[in-house]
Amino acid sequence: MLRRISVLCLLLYSAAIVKAQDQLDKSLLMDYLQEQQYDLVIRYMEETVKPSHVNGLAILANAYLQNGQPADAEKTYQLVLEKDSNHIAARQQLGNIARAKQQYTQAVVHYSKLVELRPDKAIYYRQLASAAFNITGLQDTAFALMKTSYRLNQKDPAVVLFLAEEYIDRK
Image (cartoon, rainbow, N blue to C red; front, top):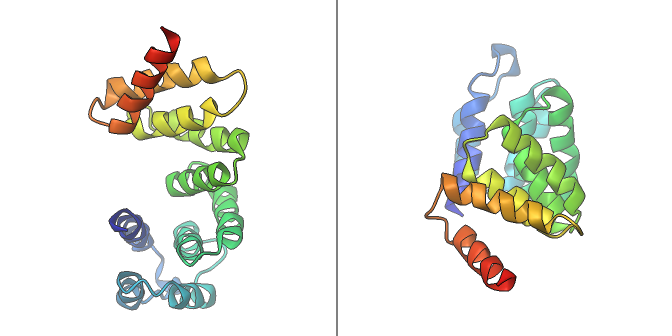
């Protein structure tokens, strides 16, 4: 829950870069987000955000996702990537959506791009490894990716558990 609000706040902060003509009422939007009134965020953003505004589209996509509308979120995140193929939040959420739909090959595409963009972030290696592990023939690659994640963050219990189970299975 806190992570979702943090992501939304980060996106809202990114929207602070909005040009004056976009006329976003940031305090109203923040109130909606803090109260988790995602339907109001959606309505407001659909009426306000311009199709060319990447961060506004990302906020709208995240609101769709939080409001239980993953198809709309996915479509809107795709629009974000059309404008900015390196948009971190869009890549992250599209990878998560693909993984939830068990579309692991598509998830790998998004997570691989995150690793390319942020090679120092253990979480991206972990997510890439988790998706790759579910694709036939990529289990060794997944294992190597998890070891990289562990090297970057040795305190992640999910990584430690994965590696321990793999080491036991391989012995």
